[in-house]
Structure formats: structure tokens, C-alpha cells
Amino acid sequence: MTAESPAQFHPLEWGYFRVMRVMGNFGDFGGYVKIHDWEVRGDGKTPVHVRRAAQFTSDVDYDMPFDCDVYQEKLQSLAGVDALSGDQS
Image 1 (cartoon, rainbow, N blue to C red):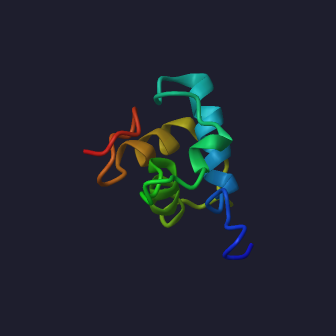
Image 2 (cartoon, rainbow, N blue to C red; image 1 turned 120 degrees about the vertical axis):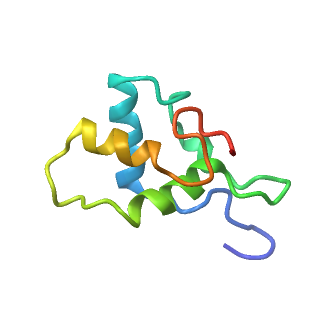
Image 3 (cartoon, helix red, strand yellow; image 1 turned 120 degrees about the horizontal axis):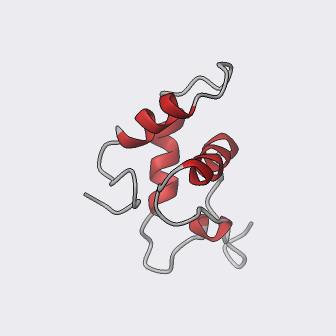
């Protein structure tokens, strides 16, 4: 990446991405998360899933067995965003 060729995507937290994909199979957590949700925006704003991933991974323990109820609670507790739609609140 250079000034002439800047990053096209924000760094992706794989654990959050996979949790969102799996949870989407078991409930309504907004639109199906896709890689384009990490694209660098022309308006300079940070995409909602980039913000949510940072919040989510600061509180999750990936060494614990996957538990839909635990992850649902964590997703719904994210501050500043609607946990189901991903919209700013």
C-alpha cells in the first residue's frame, strides 16, 4: 500500500466475520455480512462492521466453545450500533 495505491479494505477480524456468518444462519442479525462491508469508504467514515468487530473482539474469548446464546448476547450488547441491523444508534 502506498499513497498512490491505498488500502481498499479495512483489516478484517476473522473471528467476528465467522461469528456473524454463523449467527446469520440461526437468527436475524441484519443483512448477511460480506467482505464488501470492510471496504474503505470514499466519505472517510469507518464501516459499521469494522467498528462492531473492534468492540466484539475486545470482549470475546475464542478459546471457549461456540455458543449461539453467548454470542447473541455479546452482539446485542455492542455500544453505539443496533446489534441486529448494524445501524448507528
